Image (cartoon, rainbow, N blue to C red; front, side, top):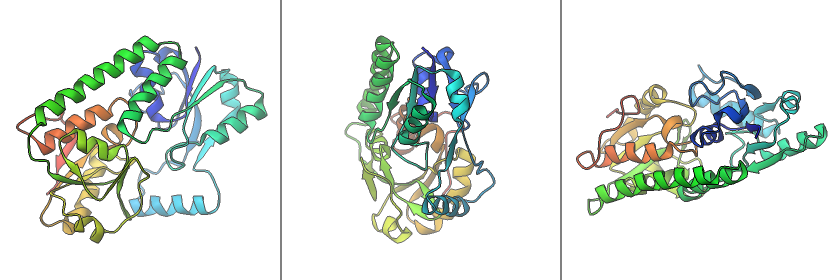
Length: 294
């Protein structure tokens, strides 16, 4: 089956299901595995925001959205030339990826009859369910079942390791300028890791908040996981968070790898967060994934 992924998390799912050789089209942001774009056609482009500050990125996004402009560009001709059979897309967040409606319109205009699967999970359980959906639609349901079982076994192991321990209050900052709360599946990661998420919106969209509101929640630990940034970027931004939480421990996490993309590595994220919350109960996180800032 000729597959096209229009979001990085879907690309990770495809590879986790052993379908990397069937993947013919990806986005400019698909970087996991590192070879994901090596021999694939890039069918979605967008602005490279490296070098921009969080405030500059926020202003750019708000300006584009207010004008009704898209943040991503679908290379429709390249997509049609691939003659895909299954396209993986989303409607969860216009800031994160191309919405499925635009994809369907383009396919109709091009006369392309590909099957389009929209992935819109809002919770950790729903994320795991998307692996089953992709596996079934791509013809590998057994692989999907085995993948989900293995991931759930790892979650069960973390739950057993932290059972009965005090659950620290944890605030996650998904963006720092302006600050945004943790939403969607992100609070579930904290719960699965043995913490209590505060100032969060489990199963709902992340929203802009204030530092005062976040501090009023009384977190013991603050995790900085800015969308679109790996550990170095998260650690640099966490420095701006420290003054707002004088009584909390501040940690930076590789958000793109472990927190914000709804793919298989979210379980790595649960294990890494558990290593922060309960370091004596679980193995340490791999190097380069987390860092204490204050």
